[in-house]
Image (cartoon, rainbow over the protein chains, first blue to last red):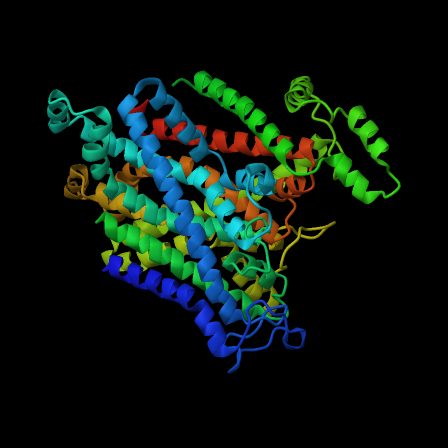
Amino acid sequence: MRLWLGLFLLGVVLVSALLADTAGSWLGLDPWAPDLFARYAPPSATHPLGTDDLGRDVALRLLHGARVSLAVGVGAALMGAVLGTLAGMLAAWRGGLADAVLMRLADALLALPALPLLIILSALDPAMLGLPRGEAASDVLRVALILAIFGWVGVARLARAAAMSVLAMDFIRAARALGVPEGRLLLRHVLPALLGPVAVATALAVGGAILAESALSFLGLGIAPPAASWGNMLAGAQEAVFQAPLVALWPGLAILLTVLGCNLVADGLRR
Amino acid sequence: MSIPARLLQMLLTLAALSLVFYLLLGLMPGDPIDLALTADPRLTAADAERLRALHGLDRPLWARYLSWAGAVLRGDFGYSRLFARPVLALIGPALLSSLALLGLALGLAVLAGVGLGVLAALRPRLGPAVQGLAALAQAMPGFWLGILLIILFAVTLGWLPAGGAAEGGEPRWPFLVLPVATLAFGHMAAYARHALSAMRGAMADPWIRTARARGASEGRVALRHALPNAAVPLITLLGLDAGSLVSGAVITETLFARPGMGKLIFDAVMGNDYNLALVALLLVAGVTMLGNLAADLGQRALDPRLA
């Protein structure tokens, strides 16, 4: 029930993201073209949800924002899942020093306030990290990478716990006694057992990354305008709460429903 | 681990963090001299080189870190470039303002969250409503709720200020209401969910039946017998929550233009104010770690099995 409700919400967001261009040509509007004579226009037939501070169509920008949010959320969560699974498996398999170092690092990252660290990482020069500067696609990649630096921790802890319980089982001893090489052992016998918990953590991480992206973009450190992201749309709307309070409603609602969808899917998978 | 060992570990972590922060800040584009160049067109390239040498900015990053760390250990935290005042003089009032916001929001989140959770555990019909509210609160971007509250209470009703801080003899509380509510709402969710499941578990324990058989009232059973047992996981959560609460305070302060540590860190990082950014970041990390330690100690005090 929760799973299906969550999948439905995410499906709606996915379809909106896919239809962004079609909807634009259908309405005959360009989501990036400013129209200074139609600033903060109320909802109408041409602009279903009104216009923003530069007279751009809010509904179209919401659809394009769905692309950015999904790309950042899924990208960060997948990178975090891969890193976390590797780290968790390594910690459980090697034990000893590798385990201690990885888990203390994870503890430290969990205990620290993430946002101040994200602010520093986002303020770094992307060129120094080998990324091109100032394009929407590289912004998405940069934000997803930064979020994955924190995102692997939750996955690693779950993967480590699951891997440890599998590695203690009899069939692992049997496989080792049969001479199965360690790499094959981890890949064929341990990894499949981790997929369940990792899937749950990844679904949760998508929602977490979408929230974090919106916070960073709201602070002006995430996706840079003119590209539309739900976070930077909110930042623009906040400056105009006195003139056009409604503009602030939609991007937040979109974030809320998407993150709710991710959390419901994670909850449903867990059961 | 004993308390002195924990404190020592904290200090080592802070020392390691200071190096990481210093290196990261050093990787940021532009240095203070670049900013001076953009501010004063009469400065020549030769002037810039001379200024860099004068302030030691031509030295390698690790040498600069060592001399900064040495000065800090001697108690010299330096001056803020942005505000032209000693770093410590800036941090004092900002820390107090942030702690007021954090303390009130945490208190409200715990009271409301645990209250709702306990209520839902005792009255099963309320369960779905509380769980639904918690799910919404957890999925909502905190700053969006803040914007909505500003629209309702500051713009439409005009009851409360939209942001800023009290000046002169103004009362302080109107400036705290919306930020505290914004920060508390999102964090309430986790406490409500955990309190609900912990109370459900505790109410099924055998000593609850014993207490009821002795004739204890339902309220006494819940508050005196079940709640203390349910509180242990909640205190664990308190420790885990410290970091995200501080993160939430950063964005809440920015949204409401409240002078505090969050805004100070943001301005300092954006303005290449290394001295201020480093000290403020380390302080925030230290406060978070102290919060974790306090949660650990509280847990041991409640549950003798852990000590």
